[in-house]
Amino acid sequence: MNPTAESATHNTPLGEEKQGEVYLAERKEEFAKRYYIESYGCAMNFADTEIVASILTKEGYGPTEEMDGADLLLINTCSIREKAEDTVRKRLKIFNKAKRANKGAMIGVLGCMAERLKSKFLEEEKLVDIVVGPDAYRDIPSLIAGAEHGNKGVNVLLSREETYADISPVRLDSNGVSAFISIMRGCDNMCSFCVVPFTRGRERSRDLYSIVAEATELWEQGYKEVTLLGQNVDSYKWENPETKEVVSFAQLLVHVAKVNPKLRVRFSTSHPKDIDDEVMFAIRDHHNICNYIHLPIQSGNSRILKLMNRTYDREWYMDKVKRIYEVIPDCAISSDIITGFCSETEEEHQDTLSIIEWAKYTMSYMFYYSERPGTLAARKYPDDIDLKTKKRRLQEVVDLQLEMSHQHNLNDIGKTFEVLVEGTSKKSDQDYKGRNSQNKMIIFPKVEGIKIGDYVMVKVGDTTKATLKGKIVSV
Image (cartoon, rainbow, N blue to C red; front, side, top):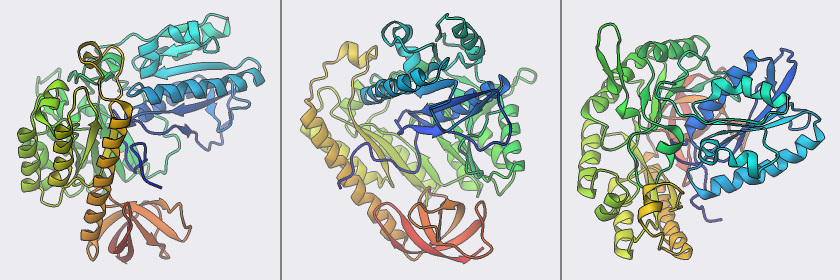
């Protein structure tokens, strides 16, 4: 089967859709009520789900993996593309069946789609009881209380201050090895195709101390890897109210890396205009900051980039990639790519293909353009590329990226990498799986005495187009 733009990979950057996952946790505690929750979209949505879980736990709700019997049915939504919203509407119909079977159950819509459509969910989707935007999760208990008395409620107010810094996330569906840490919320970039600034509001950064404290707590609980999350992490900026010292993202990276040299640190997502030498130096100088940067280009053509309001052109982006490879020679770079943006010509599409090959992306998240209501592109530019052409161009991008990814993997044969054991392979219970610093998944046979959460040295002996295969050579 030919992979498509919807093909899943082992990491989901911000702004890109991920298939829905049921979040649950195996708990011994008894709860008065149960909630069932599905989350769609970017990594930030999945981190938000853990915030919601923490709030619900304090209200006496426990997680369940079954819709039937749940007192509260929640769906955390994404508005990045039309397909994501269509998926949510289909899932709500299934939720409705469960609601009819569960006397007294309530349905709630959370996240970006909730903010974008607001009260329409209560008016058009009669089955929905509460609608809660990304900055209003603290209000969930009061909205539930109102709904219990027949008062359907909505709170989608955006905030300039909310970071949920004081809420300790409940690590749902966790492997006990890797965890997300949200370091900032919102986005100020205003890319013409993107709805995120309208659904998540303006940028605001979480304080340094709470981030480091969360990383420390995770390490003490046995976690070995954290991913720092933000719509644009490189624009992180926090001012200490006492000393007036301004902490940059590079400085934050170093603070988290110093929690413990065995705690791996990743981050997502970077905007090319904001990642600087200091971030690169932090990666270069700290072994536990992973040699992997997700650096979305979106298009390889300067005119299209201008229409997208990306604030850089092709040549500027190429200089940034050159600088990354100069400072961190073994860095892996991945990207986001949109095909068929407004007025894109075949020649401009070829520019995107050429940048994939030139930049040597290890992988990309690839989609055809989906017009989102309310964005600058929707207001200003005709969506004039037909769907057949969009999909054909997309498939050409996917095919080329697969070829590039495979070549990367072939070049790794014979090399030895430090790998963090993340779990058992899905295809064989005799194999472990784990990623190296470059974010590449490696499968290798289990060895007695090695457990999930250990670091091992794995020599690569074979590869598929997507996955490296190897054997443990030392620990």
